[in-house]
Image (cartoon, rainbow over all chains, first blue to last red; front, side, top):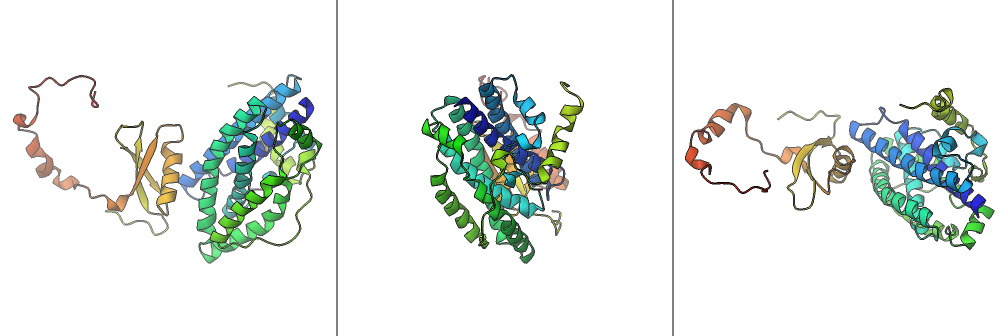
Length: 250
Length: 98
């Protein structure tokens, strides 16, 4: 179980580390001061969640790697995040749509994971779920205002949704890691979470006057280390300080 | 009152309550297009480190303020009438103003 749990904690930790980093790129560039602060807050929440999941991963692995070692000293192919999380931040509309899709999925996943038979995992999920409820409220409100907004804002939101929707196919990807842990009651089956997630997403999109694009979902890849060309650039920036000054403290 | 900048969202005054039963006190202001986002912006700006258990937001335009030029006639008459101050009584300690 421990190797499966290591992988699982990496997946959830990496989702939040990478998306948190993407959000942090808005710091100082937000559309208005208040939203700049809000995005930075959410980024910090996600990075805090990543810290907990990666710390757990390091403990489970038992090789002496802590959360910093896992965040800063792994290569691109060792990252297990969803590809959706690593896509460049785009315009504010793209950031909002991605955040909403991710928050809505996290809301359902973390709620179910809060019932894990693994005490520590359940506790991390419960804490993260509480934060996610606020993230979801924030991103949902922006979906409504920008979707059902001006011609310009609606156009940008629809373009972002058309681009992002196919990537959500990876949310419910499962393999032997999930199956091994699910059999022991440690993690939920993801399949039953898809319907309530989609109901929530479609409801907000309908109220935001946005249309869900038809068409196939993309192939999964992130969960076994296959990434877009964007992740390498992100990691180069995220990891350079830690790698240039190993063990530095301030 | 200053006219709002045409590109700016309306201004909202933020009041935060530090704990249940305490008064809501003015914390500052935020810009927001509507009440719900004003509440969220206030939460992120003034309560992100756990400073509050409750927040009020009020459109700044809804506040009627006394005028600084009129401060003299408005407030001075209250300053020279000691009989209006209950200073001959001992105020119990532990009250909300301690």
